[in-house]
Length: 218
Image (tube, rainbow, N blue to C red; front, side):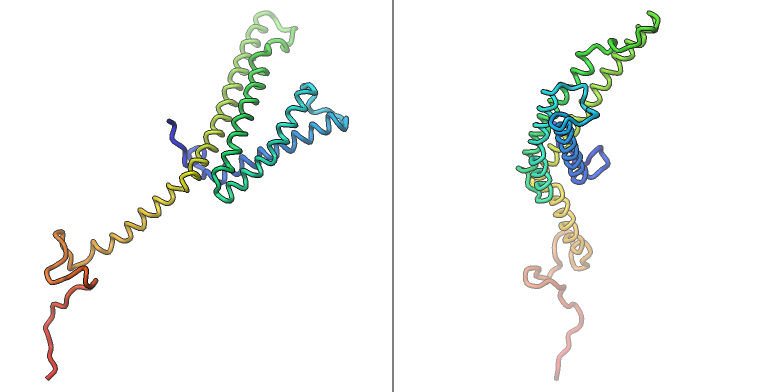
């Protein structure tokens, strides 16, 4: 099983990056809902989703509308360090990535990239342009799918960290505290590898016995 990551892109702190992902996703949902309302209900022009059908716009706006409260709950889960709240957003993110991957595959793969090429090109030039367009389509699909998969992996990693109660931070703090307690023992002059010096009861006192000359009051 793939272990969870402790940083984003191997160099950035995970918690602020996950919070930024949720805020960007929230902004995307709000914009999508606003565009759907403007294009379908208010007959606003220009139509920014002119290439999509009315059914696709309605379904996209409805899914974004569902996502707004889920993302808000996920942000609350990050602030309160509640793993179940953030895991609800994780499920929404997985379904969203699957839907986006299907649409990307339809745009880049299922539709012929050579259909929109300039017909005035020569046969050899048109063949080269068609091959390049298809290569760019496949590359774009793989890159975007990999980016979405990594985002899902990062959110899942943070969910695991919350489920463990931030165990990595707690373990690091315990180890540092343990090293701080062990350090004074190593520098005690009255201690030896075999144990405390003779005449020193470590259970009775925490200071070395007095080895100097005794005095009496007469």
